[in-house]
Length: 421
Image (cartoon, rainbow, N blue to C red; front, side):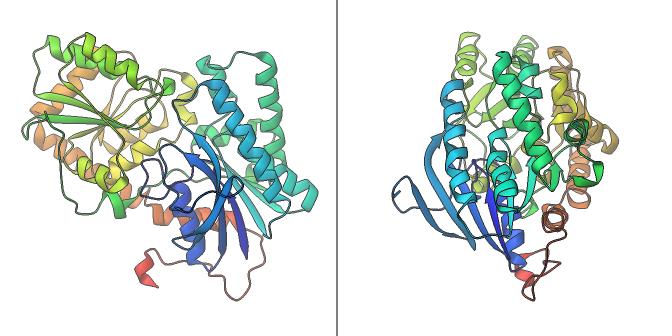
């Protein structure tokens, strides 16, 4: 059996971005399935291919996954028009592969929404099985954020969303709100499955060499944000809390940012302007290096802009990385993630846009280390019992391959660890 897998922002663990697609593709490979991953050149990613591009693409095998990488550079720092053009160019080239490659199932995952275009062509022109994974609701989120206001663009995106959902034989949503959003577009519930982001316990739960950035003492409370520095993340909220902590004289609490994004330079300029010496900015690091930083961290920061569409409509990678590392999580918006933290008592859900409450939660963490450690243990337990990537990956793989004819080489249940083979 062969699966053609489209993810424009694919990366291996050597990159600094999320590795859900890598792990899911590996899960299929463990079942004896041939996977061809189609991607672009993402700024935070490492595809594992080193050969030069020929005619705009390169091809090779990485950890058992056949990878086709288009020479289409993308960065979160790119402007809206540049990003849009890159999305469309990737979709156009992907359609060419969808119409010519040999495969049984086409799987596509957002973002961007244009990821669904090759699946639409594969379904209606070649009669192929199409499974579509939705990581964010488009155009709902950009409309709610005010990022896209042009009614023609919004209408085009809405049409593409409807066509993608109704062309797919099966769909996967990464959060309860995403699943509900798909169903609101008229897709029967039996065709939609919730498979949240998972915890990479082999990376963030393993014993690693701990390290702290220069300027963070061993006795300091280290609160970490690891992710994209963009509009959706609302990271001024962290600087607001840093300013409040400065006013309170809490120089023993350090807020560390690691990652990249369009607004990083603005955030750095504000921190410099306001003399926020309790804030430290780092460049992106690979997963192994990030695991060492998290092992020395006291609190993970799950931050998003105060946009109601985010409350139930996102499944943030960083939250699952934090709990895999056994970190208490400070979350600054309501919704299903805040509900998880409250239910499992593994962190601090604080109200949006409340710098005082944000700062007070960090002060409590600094002054109650035993309680903080207990929250961390509960985070790790939640990761292991509910969100272990190995468990969720098997659910995902079963759904992707549902109703497909299995030959004698395909394994219905892959081992939870590669060493188990």
